Length: 478
Ligand code: AMP
Image 1 (tube, rainbow, N blue to C red):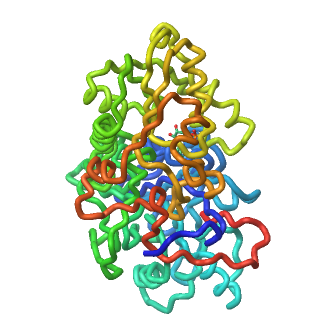
Image 2: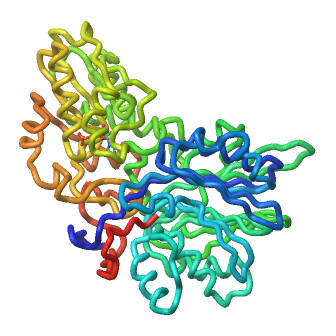
Image 3: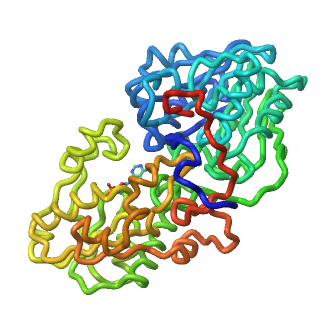
């Protein structure tokens, strides 16, 4: 472990969802549904690669899953196995180039790969590969994995992948489809989730499915069986399923922010219901930060489960006094600054009669820059609230994430540069309270210290490698 520094390397921005299926006659169609359920994990681009046993076909584009995968596009994706990816990133003109899956043909045959997470030594590996003659098409670190595999002298594809993965540092939940098999793997710290499930098919056949979150299984009628273990590789092929540990055991570092914000509340993440964690966060927040008030109001949707917990614990009534327009994307995730500023009004509208003359406890999951929170506090006050008490269901976000969550650089993180009272004044709340680190650990049941809390502590569970200066453009490592 070591302390993170602002200038450790350029901030890599990436939020993604992955899906994979083996043994289903309509693998691409099911992958489409899986990605549809994982849309919240990335709304910039999406892609599906399917395999027929002989060839791999890949289709990807910018935009939302349902807009990209029209019936005529899905019809171009035959086969009984497929992988899929949804992606969000903020930087680079080459966004389409970096859309996943990446599909190539090398001496191991045709392969397509996609992953969720950031590989923290990707730039270093890429520099070495380039010095050795490799030519890169994009700036995504998925491509680094493909080059490492292509150079491997291992005989089997799984062997080549194992050799590649052992050179990686950081976070990855990876899905790969090859001519006759599907392979998924998770980094040894288990930063990002990857669940494994089964689907009953006709004639007593079973399909195997993998997804970032179990909400994808619910939609397709699959049953969650287990997580792909940190440091584990699962190979599914004509001869069945093989699970093997490819890397030595490392300290676990599950991303706690998945439970705080990122995952859907109807998912199991790291084997635990997200809704349960969020309600517990709200209850503990109420115990740690009580205040006399008339109503508990969530910032939808991110604050709903925690607000329910806060209301239940405090006995103060829960009121949905901010209504969200669901047809607008999450404003934070919109790449354009212009839309972000405008976004709060597009997204939220107050229910005036629930707020007029009331002392309001406003519950949200996090404050990042503070700008959205300030607009919401103003909106609630303009709707007639007498007092606005802001409660946040995690500790102050003081350090960027290098493992696959899009938190901004330290300069832009309000809690990295201000005291809690300064933040309170900035967001214009009458009071402000955060959940403590201990409270968060209790809420996610982290008795064994299995979670990464780097965004709240600045203590990173892996070495962070300096990005070289060869790239003039800010790298957008996928
Ligand atoms: P702000 O007040 O501008 O810091 O925005 C806070 C809002 O951003 C909260 O409602 C959070 O739910 C949301 N948020 C925090 N982290 C992220 C993220 N990585 N992606 C999208 N939204 C986020």
